[in-house]
Length: 101
Image 1 (spheres, rainbow, N blue to C red):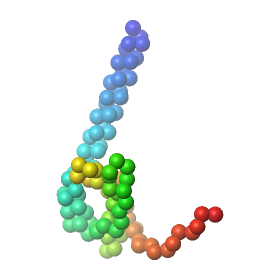
Image 2: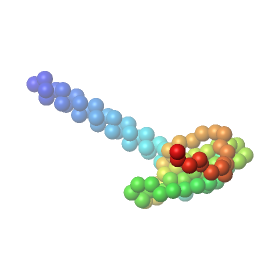
Image 3: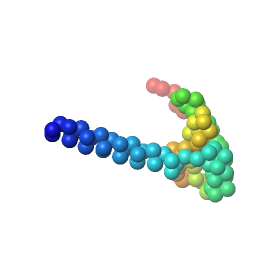
Image 4: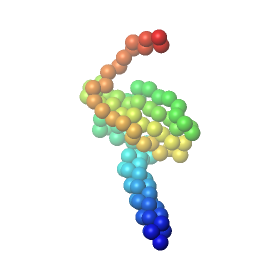
């Protein structure tokens, strides 16, 4: 009986954590068009770089020279774009990385 109650409690906890994760994703994701419009209109950010991620996703870096704000997004194959990280004090850097020693 104790094992059954323990398993039910653990299952409920896992479901709550999963629901919170989905809710958090929903707050940080929107159709690509809406995300780009907000980054441009609200923050003055433009795309500065991009790369391919796993499973066909595209990672992009947006930044503003005026405010120094920056945002990293990931766009999924279904057109949904999620905010991954953001911050301040963006600077363009053209220095080559040092070779691996």
